[in-house]
Amino acid sequence: MTRILLVCMANVCRSPMAYSVARQLAREAGLAGLLKFDSAGTHSPTTGRRMDARANAALMSRGYAPEKTRSKRIGEQDFERFDLILAMDSGNLEALQRQCPPSHQHKLRLLLSYAPETGATEVPDPYYGDTAGFMRVLDLCEAALRGLMAKLA
Image (cartoon, rainbow, N blue to C red):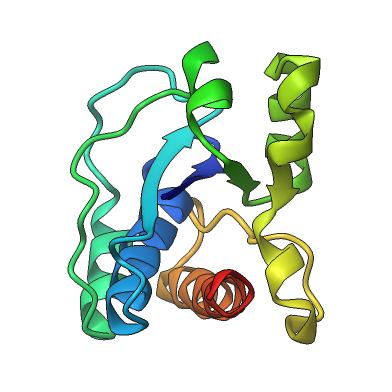
């Protein structure tokens, strides 16, 4: 089983959206028994926050079931427990690199490294934006996670 952690800042928008997309795409690809996903935040001030309602709405508009119910902050044990840790942007990747033990640095990557066709390297934070920003996040997550599934299949 390959364990994959999806990481953004507060774990209320991007990474829980990616988590829901990843789980559904894995089921559709017949990989659900081989891949385990979770999400976390690098700067989440508290654990237990609900996913942003706009993130929920964006997911449901495309037929995804919002699956992550509460936020959590990345912990030291996560670097050992997960095989791959995918950051939404370079700021979060740098935060992960500072926290991650040297023996696990090879697990850290940007999520969009699996979707070079998008021309983007970062999934932008939609928190202070409008619905279009959440839909853009969803587009990028779908592209990257399809690329990841193709690579892991």
